[in-house]
Amino acid sequence: MMLMRTDPFRDFDRITQRLLGDTARPAAMPMDAYRDGDHFVIHFDLPGVRPDSIDLEIERNVLTVRAERADTAQQGREMVAAERPSGTFSRQLFLGETLDADNIAADYADGVLTLRVPVAEQAKPRKINVSGGDQARRISA
Image (tube, rainbow, N blue to C red; front, top):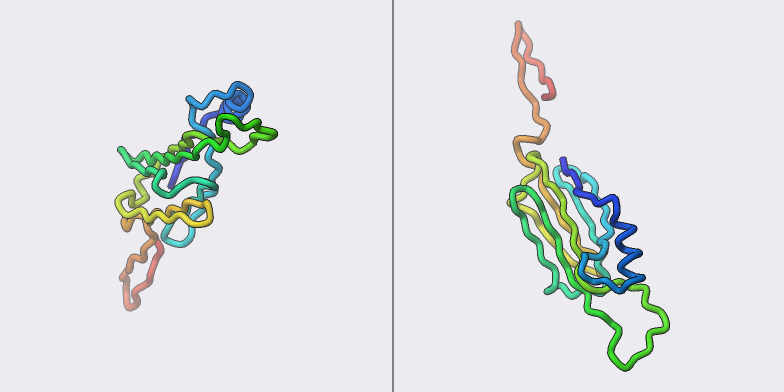
């Protein structure tokens, strides 16, 4: 199982960042996560991010994803609209004991970072044979 570390004030902070131009705090990184068979799949939207700016780190079952998008505003230009966030993006996920954090696969295509986290062998459903009398039965564990 996977538990996300969330910040209830994230949306408020994002609005404040835009209004005040504060880039010290990480910007939002939208994500989808679901189980697909023996893997958890996580998609992070990171359009306009260079693959070499993406950093993945695991420490004590906490996965930290960081990425950076360069500021498109250049000196001497008058911005008419500036709605695309730039700067550092960061997100942390707690990977439960049922996931195999040592074998995460990462892929970045079309502005989407996809992580595939295998379910640990000991957490997968398994069958146990039960013998009794003349016939053996299989019971799900």
